[in-house]
Image 1 (cartoon, each protein chain N blue to C red):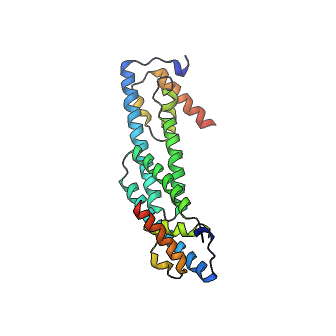
Image 2 (cartoon, chains in turn green, yellow):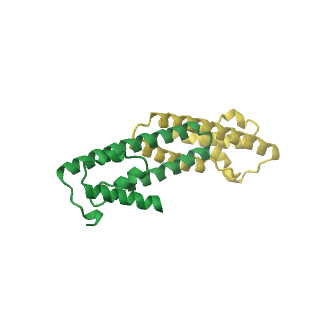
Image 3 (cartoon, rainbow over the protein chains, first blue to last red):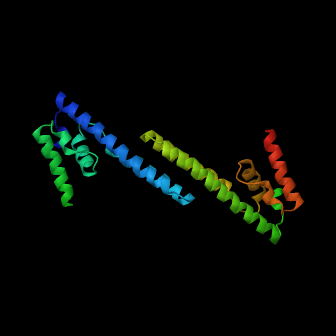
Length: 112
Length: 112
């Protein structure tokens, strides 16, 4: 079965939502910390305009990354793990086939 | 004579450049301080995206404001004074007619 065609049980949806929200919280913490460091180091106009570009890029990346559609979640979770926003252990409540799909994506990415 | 058609003597150009550079320095200090305050207060994604918008707006305003063309300088100096970036005293070395033009813009703006 294709990764975007898996069905999600109520308990899996709960696990998925909690993992997603936790990853969002981690992403917020990391992005805020990086942003605040850059802001605190800024000393010139060009530093500020670089931060403007950085924020635009972050916004685009995060909006693309945090896509809570069940058809996308396998790929989303794999990406979140890869980016260090999600601890794979939080997905323990998902079915074996879903966890295997995620591992396949991670293994594929590690190879490329 | 129209404000954008005045001639600038070498000594006036020197005064103008020094005043312009000083105003740029003041604008940098104020913008940096305001930006750093906002960055330090940021606690959410939407706070960061608001700062992105704020920076874009500042960049546009400042690029428009700091226009060192002799044809524009009278208007530029009046705007810089109005924004609190330039101390009018720094323009003491300019001819009487230039200082009067600047005062006229400021008086006009104060009325509107």
